[in-house]
Image 1: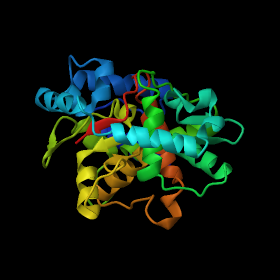
Image 2: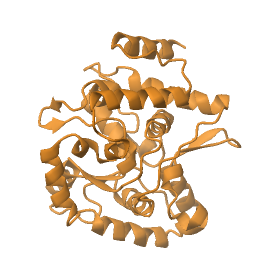
Image 3: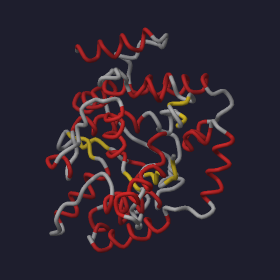
Image 4: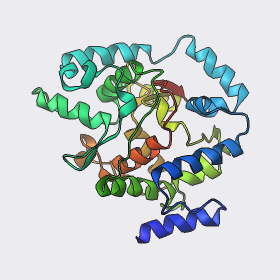
Length: 293
């Protein structure tokens, strides 16, 4: 309850409607309305393109990169791993064209399933050792699966189930609550300051964020090259799990998925955040994997 009050206070101080006790549907309506007002003329589907929907100069640069996308080798390598690990038999439709339904709430277990967690569970079930969740092989597999879902509309369901709503509200609280030495929230950067510059980067709108993950970031590719002297098919790739940890690190908050314990499984806080975060982009078509700054 205390965490929800923090969320409510943070939102009300910024002149937004009080969302703490709103339903997911009401949250989604208010979330969209905020960005439609902030970026007039930008249509819902365009938000899947992140900063390239709001900055024409960066959009031109991005479109030029997309003519020879740097993520193609990663998709091919991810497809090969998908077959190697026998993942098709663990998912509906052989694992193709299903990403738009993730994360989903499983009423039997009372838990939210993310795509990377289900990939990991299948890998283990098929007798293989678990792999890291943030980059490398996992990012490649998820990128391939995302690619097979391009054009599908995100359709995350939050049922009227106390357990599902509890997880959803936990993610909502994380999104709006301030943290770290810089005292920032996800909303500070990607709602209230979206479209503004942070050092050399343009802050992207949160609406549509999850539609293009896994992403291939130039920043990550440079980091890989600096460390290994080459990029490889998965260099530059990262799952949303990797991005959440990076964001917390940037605001000097505790990185919840850091260390051996969380390398091969998800922290429940980030699962909840992904559930809320993705629901807020419902109705937007997937276009991942995508190039980002």
